Length: 300
Image 1 (cartoon, rainbow, N blue to C red):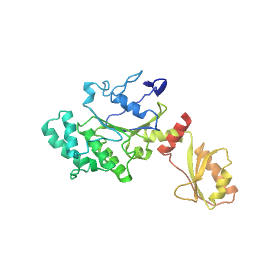
Image 2: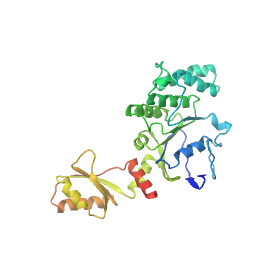
Image 3: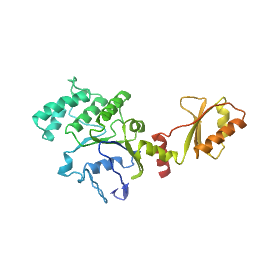
Image 4: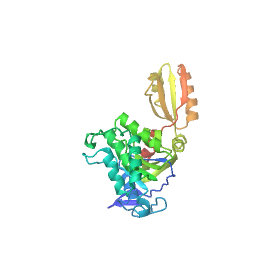
């Protein structure tokens, strides 16, 4: 699929699929094309070429509209309404039966932790608004829930509450989770796709995507009795791409090397030749952030 605004190509051959019942992380830096993709999925924009199918149907079709729930990054509500009134109003838009509304509204309020809140929405915190936005998006029991940066501006407690809610939905509905906050994705997602300049540069399970980094580069944690001296010795080595102290231990170094097995052997040799004591030498599993930064920097 491609999408252009004037001469600017925002989506450039975008190609991806999402497994039913999964929590799918759609990753990319600001401007990568995430929001444009979501607008096309919601039939708020149209692609210039290619095609999009949701459960086999075109976005915006009568068959699809009732099957989708959407929560934007900043949900907006009338400030004078209560959470219950917001959900009842949303239910009316989907023409849900009174019996369904009486059952579903209390269940959702309980799910988001607002069942006992009588305050008007205008007095809600950002985290409370985000949780209410999720509940509103779930009022029609959607088969697909689309979330656009649902945790981007939340404090740690708010982020935790929203992520726990997304985890509760796993297996019950398909969640398409657009974000640039990689730790959130590692916590809740089954599969991911990394978008850069309108193209998917890698996609698959978390383990598979991490493996794309490990196949080309590796990281080693090295702990010695004189880490500063070892760092000076290794900085000039061509097989060391990056070197720094680890965040948690100033005695340990974190090295990025071209080949992890060969790099480990060379580090051990260097430590011995310097007369240092080697306390620890172990590989560090690549994080999603490692993969993201590596692929996005290469693509620029």
